[in-house]
Length: 169
Image (cartoon, rainbow, N blue to C red; front, side):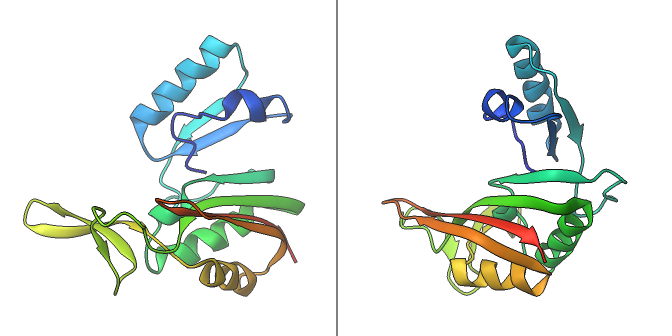
């Protein structure tokens, strides 16, 4: 989910029977397809908005959130978590890798009230990233039927990252 240009393609493709990357950005999908061709790796890439589009009938053994979930804001977060549970196979895992906690860089336009990074776009303010706490993210996953297997918080001088491994309960 949120494969972007698929920077982990080579590593993960060696571990998988089938590699499917999904991202909303057509330019990222194009770059990922080129990367797969250059690396001679068999992979499928889908340009799709997982929030507004149906999830299809495919079931996956492993779903990797590659800095995707922090782009999902508000009520859409619960929608996406429900969609992820619908496409995960029994005993499958979801690995979440997302930014957490407020940004530590004071240059980042962060709104403490909304917990979002915000940018001015034309005449309005647009939220672009949601910085949940690890506790809030874990609660969201547990509320939606996931079981926590393992979690880590990577503390950094600029931004903390949350790494969680979940399975369906």
